[in-house]
Figure 1 (cartoon, helix red, strand yellow):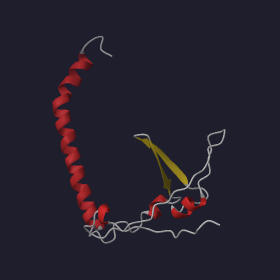
Figure 2 (cartoon, rainbow, N blue to C red; figure 1 turned 90 degrees about the horizontal axis):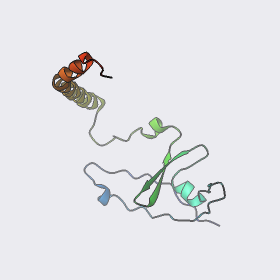
Figure 3 (cartoon, one colour; figure 1 turned 90 degrees about the vertical axis):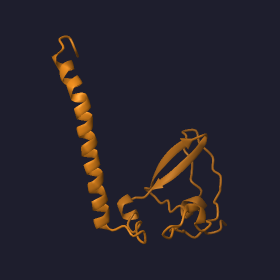
Figure 4 (cartoon, helix red, strand yellow; figure 1 turned 60 degrees about the vertical axis):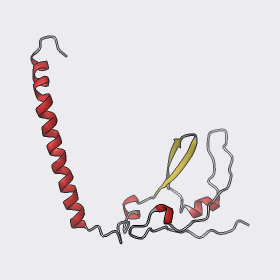
Length: 129
């Protein structure tokens, strides 16, 4: 009988790095790949990662290592409370986003100023595509 694993969520305190995060016991298990490329996620891993029926998986291959990241059924709901304790407020977020938009507009104007002349001359040149 497999040992039941308790689901855990790790929450970093303000200013705490991932290196200082509480240690979570590593999980490992094995499964086989079948003829059609399918496999079964071992129960211990499913329970530890809260993978349930309908959960989508994101697969990445980086430097020869396969990373499988479960995507929650309700990704927006899963993010609820993620900024709690960080000091970030909705008003602060909106102010920061407004500053980013202003910077993007300035960059667009600068690009247009540098490139608009070239684009117009290319339009006037006969035989250009």
